Length: 343
Image (cartoon, rainbow, N blue to C red):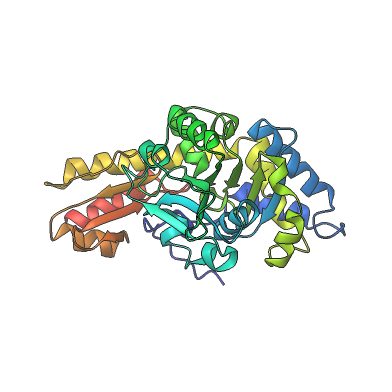
């Protein structure tokens, strides 16, 4: 029985369904028997597609169920328990993963104030690393979220500069790519361009039309040593792996990732424009570069957006709201929301 809600939600791209081509891939994978634990041809093909996408034939690819798992396991592979992760104060690993990275790895997250959602270059430049002081954690990994939690996007030059300084200080760089596709579309670049200088990538798909499939991609294969054991011990080794990996076949073979993200980004810009036009006094603290719109609106519009969107109240003191568009958001959905809010 279909008990779904027909009205689209702007609360999160996680509220959206699964793209029909992905559902078809799942049905296609559900034929006969195949080897378990990733030893099947579907998973082999998916790994190869991701290697091609990031432009590295030697990349090590491991599929997991969730973004939190991808981030946490990436950190566990890169850091020992006395080593630390550098991130922004609003990073998903710092604010929205229930302490999973720290609990499961023992590594402390050192959070710094963001600038427009991004980790300032000066943070990495000024970072003091003393390998002879056992009283303090030792910085080891820089984690960047692309696109950021504020819907902004690191430019390719931003990434290059951050990685250059990090590597000069013998630090590794991780990218949380839950919305990697949205960032690539905004920049008009490839996944290979985004991954060129980093060491580990959490390759996201769930927010862009997949069911529950993410991948940990090691651009620096040495870090992946014994990672298969880490994944198993962390309860992320799927026995019927093909049902995770098959989702990446239409996603990458047919450029579904680009189509979905392009549409979501376009709808976010359409939504922003509609709010700007129809709601007096609307303030947008951040540019809309991916599929998220952050806005402060006066009452009674704020209460209506929160209820009708629904929108996520990002910051209670300022009234900052977040609205997110997905691959299946339509202009009709946006128009309907604004009609409900302004009438």
